[in-house]
Length: 503
Image (cartoon, rainbow, N blue to C red):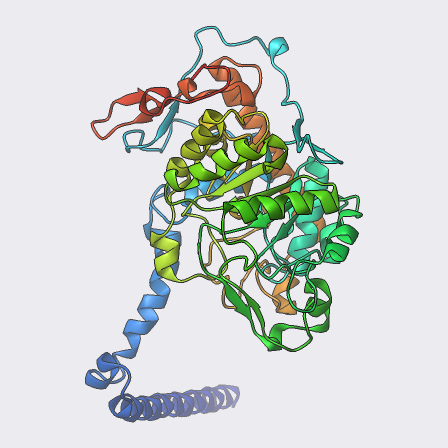
């Protein structure tokens, strides 16, 4: 009796499963027929029209290809824009522990342009090395800035990145003793959470310091400068990912909060021009710089991308004609390989010199006109690891700033979804559910660890080449690999014009 009942029970289960199988199979056939009709009648995709149903797999595999290349097929040094080895270094650095590797380097040291640092025969003993001293910016400003760190956080606007991301960066910057650039989106309350030093960036829309017509407001500039956390102002002329390109903030994204922060009208489109409408030449650029410094009392500089050093020579000539008190306090050079949340591919790929070409050109121009001690040079653009930062200092940079390196420290996985509001790590999205994945209490510590690790290892490179701190490194301390596999000293390829006449 029990056996018969069990058999009946099993048969019923099998019948149900068979029915479910038929229903699923029928649903799949019905879907295939529906997709067939849709694909054959749609006019936009020739592949789906000619190969209905199966043509859909091409789109699926194209989307999945990015995922499989990142995690399965690309070698550690192959992926772009940042490879796995670079990202892994940042990940390990955020833990605040030793960042060592075993067995041997995976880097191909024969690739042209690879920097090879020159070890000293008799490097300084441990007790002879020093930490990097603070550097003064803006000696003619009423309130100069003594910047503690040579490595700092580049501009990322609130709105481009999320509230928890901004808060974590602010608290991490304070803990590490580095500055945080606000980006052109204005000063949000979240930038102030950690009490770090801030650089207020003024973009072409002049968010936060504009009047109702979009012009620079002295009243708002003065009020902003009264905030003790704001140490400097930066005029953004251009950025590496989209030089010469403005933007539009759609009205539906202009919430009451964004409207208040940026000084724009609620629910209305806000346009960022492709350049500052009140700056038409170098003379007007220097006029605006002097005006902002006079109103705020703070150091003021500008950020730009260059296409040739010759076109910037008239600026330095004009500075010397007017006098060094009219000079910008710093110049931030962004490389053409710089990043952003969204930019047209031709501008991102093809416009603007890479930082490794642009930086030494501008440094040499500054030094040739005797302005080395007056104008600080800041390098930006894909410099996230200690070797990149050390190279930039050898080339003549006084400071290096990074945005994407600090995004990696926040947990960025390079999903390449910054412009879709679907960032899986909560960094570049305003989806509250996704933002919940970014735990500020954890991430701000990682931001600080990353900054300190870069600083520590750049200092280690400096000691290895025989100087006591990084800003004493020169171009002679690094060699660049050539196409034939040999290396040539950087100062032989591009002799410098350093004030101390030592390359």
